[in-house]
View 1 (cartoon, rainbow, N blue to C red):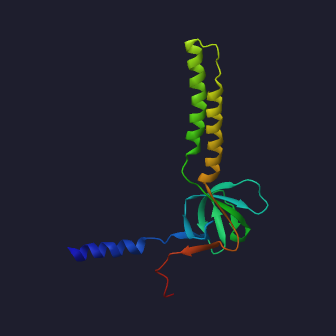
View 2 (view 1 turned 180 degrees about the vertical axis):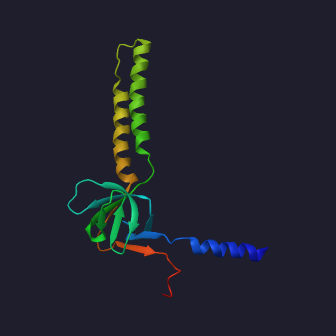
Length: 164
């Protein structure tokens, strides 16, 4: 029975295709070596040299020096200026909390018939929450600028053609 499963495994191994990987090695701000990998069909946020804003496309194929995206455009690795790695989406929660606190406090003052509808403390707390949301939005995403300490490699994990 064990031989049967090994045969099935080897049969499916011949039908599988290798996956290409965009491997990014960089040093963090504190000097620690880090790496990140993008695979086919993953979203990539990148900025090219001379661009002001990030572009967001799905990565379809990779070559040694080219990245091909879902809108049939291609980018050379030497043309990349920055890659953004998306983090946890925490900032919308902070923006919503600051806005809702102001709305609930103002609604409570209207419902209870207070003479002062807008409270200064509610404005202060809401503005602090919105400023914290802006700071968190900048920090939550990792921006990797292409400098001398950043290495981009396209890895082809096709081990079946090693002897050819």
